[in-house]
Image 1: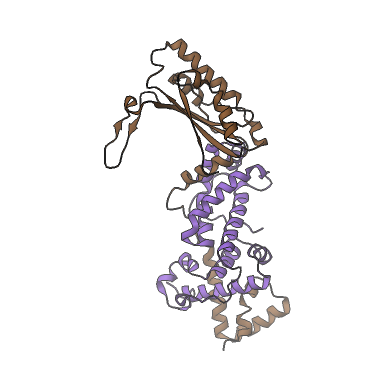
Image 2: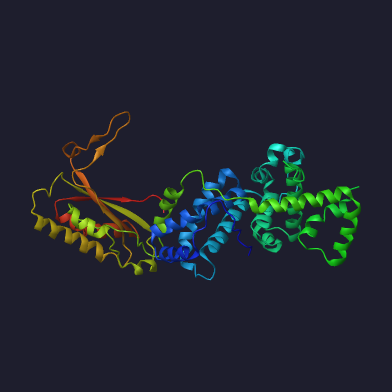
Length: 186
Length: 226
C-alpha cells in the first residue's frame, strides 16, 4: 500500500498515544475513540476533500470514522493506527467515488481554467488547482503523488487499468502545470 | 519543437518507469527541445510543491454526528460510561457510578441485538420525595442490581438518571419555563436503552424492571435507525 504522507499543519500525536487509545477504543471506549478522532480528523478530512471534493468530505469523513469504530476489532496493531485508519479512509473514499462516478473519465471535459498558463491566482494555490481537476485525474494524482500509492494499487482501487492510471496521472500533472504555471516565479 | 511521443512519456521518466534505453532516448531529445525541456522542468517544480500541501481540520466539528453513528454497532459491548440509577437515585450514588465504574460487558459482542428500545421511566412528580434516605438507597440498589443482571448478555446498553426536580419546557417562540409535573401528569425520572430481538423480548425485559414496583410506569419506545 502507499506510504502515508506525514507533513501536516496539525502536529501528529505520538504513535504510542494513538496505539493506547486504539486499544481502549477496540474494547468499546468511546472517549478514547473521540481522542483518536481529534488526533486524526484533519488527515482523514483532507484526504476525503481531495478525493471527493468539498461537498462530500464531511459525510465521507463521518462514515469513515464510524466504519473504523465498527472494524476496530480487526485492528491487530501490525500497522500503526494512523496507517490502518488512513488505508480504511482511502478505501472508503474511493468506494464512494466509484458509486458516484464511472471508474474512468478519460474523456471528461477539461476545465478551461486549468489549461490557462497564466492563471496567477491559481498559481498561488496548488490545493485549489487540484480541486478543479477532473475527478479521475484528481484521484490518481492525489493517490500517486500526494499519498504515495503505486499505479498497480491505484488501478486496483479505482477499477481501471495500470495504463489508465499512468495516463490520468500525466494528464493531471499537465493540467496542473497549466493551471499553476509552475515554472514562473510568483 | 515539442514531440508528443516524448511529452507523453515525461511523467514515466520522472517516476523512473522507463527502461535505460528509453530514458537515454528521452534525455537526448529533451536536451535539444526547448518545449519538452520546459515541460520537464515544470513537472519537477510541481513535484517539489506537493510536500508543502498541508492537512486542514474540518470546518465544523464532526464528532457529534460520528458519535451518534457509533451506538447501534458498538461491536464489542459498550464500555461507555453507564450510569445506573433508581427512580429517584441519590446524587451521591449516581456520582459513584459516574466516577469510573465500568461494567463487565465482554459477552455483549457475541450477538448484537437486532433492535434497540428505550424504556422511559415515568412516575408521578416527586413520588419518592417522602421516602427516607435508607429506603431510597434500597430502591436504588434494586435498579442497579437489575441493570447489572442484564449487562453480561448485552441487553443493557445505556441508562441515565435525570435530575429530580429539574426540567425546562421550551416551546416555539417562548421562553424556557420550568416543567410542571402536575400539568403533565407525570414526569420522566430516567431511561434505559436495551437491545432486544423484537417487541416481545423488549416487553419481557421491561416487565422485570423494578420501576413497575415503585409506583411508576414504563413507556417502551423503539429506535427507528440502526
